[in-house]
Image (cartoon, rainbow, N blue to C red; front, side, top):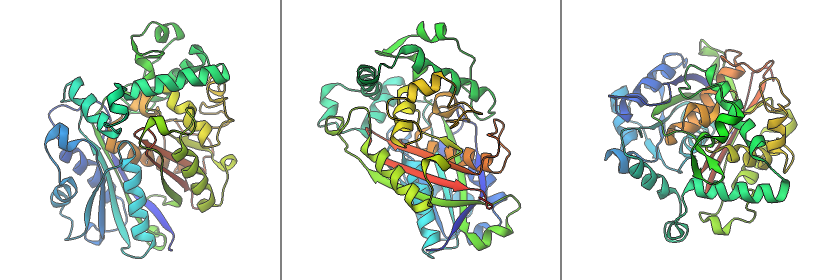
Length: 387
């Protein structure tokens, strides 16, 4: 398999973007990525587009071919990738495999979602398509309900407190204030979080990522073509994908996702690194408790210590393992299909030393994208050329 690298990157802001549809957002992000990819768009040999809800929310499928037409791409394979909230990360893995295997020398990855035009009931119904509605759906569970239950179990096992979990919220919201693409950054106090509306006890309003619109794109090329790009190429050391149970009732451990653990293990093996080598991570904090569980599953934080480390400042920029320096989903928002590609955009900026909330001397970074009740997970490890 050939070595691959990220060259061009592009992203819209994440948030409420009025007056524009998903394809328009996707084209904007892709054009930005193609502009500085070091390859002409006629050399793009495949397009993989991550999207989850364009059908039920906008009545529009065939997004990959539609966007390719708008971009003026050649007559190439164009594939829409769906893996619930992990759609973008999985699309990236497909692109890496296409280039690494020699099927093409360059591939374009886009993630996009348009959500804010729909009602809360419509968005909830569409999101719930990511669970087994013949099993968990009949119980009345929603995703906030699932993570609320996980919080209860984590607290019973490890003594996790409201204020410890709030440290995750305060960190990510504060990080978002430094990121121009994050439209939900804020400076919050413990009391403000305690007083916020209940969503699914003990989850409260600020524990939840906001519904958002947005798109992001990256161009993946074979490593020896990366030197033609105007910006520092970023090596792809690993991109792993795993499956977990589609049913929350089948999870082996209620404070862990098997797919997380397996994807992290595979990515470390592929990259030839360990968790201790990771300088920062952009991970899937759809809820505050998700960041705690994910960080533990990936071996970045000791089991049961995720909330404690956040409260002690060890996951802040400048801490032992900076988590979500971009602000994560809690501050950026979660345009479902775009999230995984947006993480890769943020990680590439970090490794180029250009991020507005820069981690000092960042050389190796990780992205993590989780879908549904742990049914799909994508973990990628990126590195500077000299790492």
